[in-house]
Every structure is written in C-alpha cells, then in structure tokens.
Image (cartoon, rainbow, N blue to C red; front, side):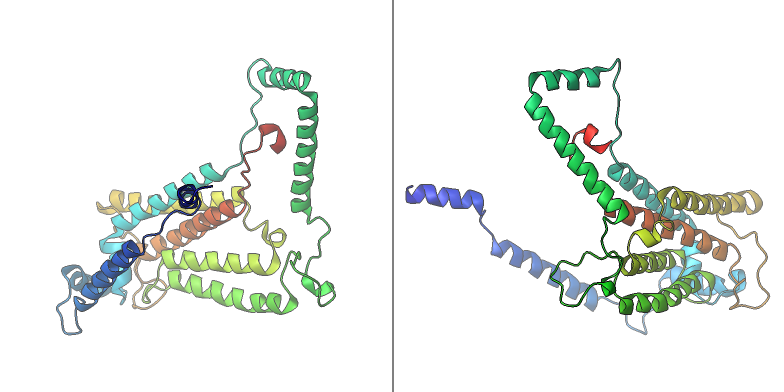
Length: 314
C-alpha cells in the first residue's frame, strides 16, 4: 500500500480534528459568560418592573411573602400554564418514540404467506432465524424474572469477579436509601406546599423524580415496578393536567382572567393556605411534572429497540 493510500485510509478511519475550532468556541463562550457576569445588576441597582410589581401585589393580593411564586403562578401564570403543556407534549413524544413496536398481522395473511414462502426458499436461513428468536425470548424472560440472579450482593461470597449481577444494592446502600428517600420526598412536597418559600411544583416534581430514581438504584426495577407502571403514572399525569386546566378555566369564568384567584385566602400570611389558587396551581404542577418526568425517564430506560423482526418481539 502506498503512502498516499495509507494516509487516505487513515483519514477515513480517524477523521481529522480541528482543535482551533474548539478553542475558538471555548473562547467565545468565555467572553459571553464574562460579559454576562459583568452586566449583572449589583445590590443597589433598581429592580425590574415585574419584580417591583411582584413585591407590591404578593402580600396584599395573595397573602404570600415570596415574590418568585407570585410571578411564576400569578403575574405570569399563563406562561407557566404553557410551559406545563409543553412538558406534556414532550412526554407524549418520548412515549411514542420509545414504545414497543406493534405486531401487525397484515391483510389477508400476507405476512404469514411471505414467511411461509421464505421458509420454502431458504429453510436453513429460516431455521437460524427461529433459533435466534428463541434465544431472544429466553433473554427477555431472564430480564423479566431475574434469571436466577441474586436479589442482593450480600448473599454472594466476597471476592467474586465482576460484573455484579444482583438486582439490588448492598445492605448499606439500601439502608441509606431507606433513610434518605423519605427526607427528600418531604422536602419536595414542602417546596410545593408552602407559598412563602421559593419553590413550586416544577422543582418539587424534579425532587420526586430523584426519590424514585434513588429507590430504583437501591432496590432494583422489580421492587418499584408498581410505582412506575406506565398506565398508572399516565393516569396521575392526566389528573394533574386536568387540575391545572380546571384552575385556569374557573379563574376565567368566575373572575374574568385565566388563573385568577377564586379561592379564599388565609387571614394570616406565611401559612399553607396563603396564595389561594397559587397553591392549587403548584400542587397540580407537582403531580404533572413529577409523573411526566418519571414516564420519560423509565420509558427511556426500558426502551429495547434492536431492529429485530416483528416476529422476534412477539
């Protein structure tokens, strides 16, 4: 092989890198971050108009002392409404892309006739496909029932070679998960429940997702299957979305504005009933966001597309 041919082959196998382009992009990003940091308002700078309005209306109108929640669920509640249903659209898209392929029988037995013709033309290839399908089914059954693998690594002798095949983590990790998961779950609910502290349904939903993932990592998929069953979680997500729509529509009907407050406010601020519909909106967001994120994450984790034939996935 000539030197020119070797160089051409090397270029095809290992395409040339352009470090100068990466350096240019990093430098541009650094300049942008530096400009943004320098342009940050200092402590004595005037507040933006929306921030001043939030401070003015949060306490008298909503009986809350947290202007962030007033902006997110009050002054700009319609924006939050739109963002919530953008998340719902993203969840639907992920579910559609990750769903298992449907087995279609065809019209008039066309697929069965085609498979029969293929077996007659090439019986050896057909037999190999049949053995491959059986192997795939065995793998799927092994994944579903654990395949005799140990439930935890604690029952295996020490010093076993990798990889680890246990479905759950060790007793130390499981104990830590049992300790941390309730605390994190209460913290997430607290973010959505108390209108005088920064938070709301969006970050609270992300915290609940973290709790579910922590349980998944500590105890394995089989132990939390009932919690993340897609049909059940989808029903909860639709319940949260319906609650948000109901709050917005009732505000329009009863008060003449989308998401306007129609609930009685607590007499004293900084209580769980402060905020009226802000709190109800935040609770709906908690349900919608947490369930939507759970659906997305576990749909991606359970995606098993291997581009096999439809018969192999029966």
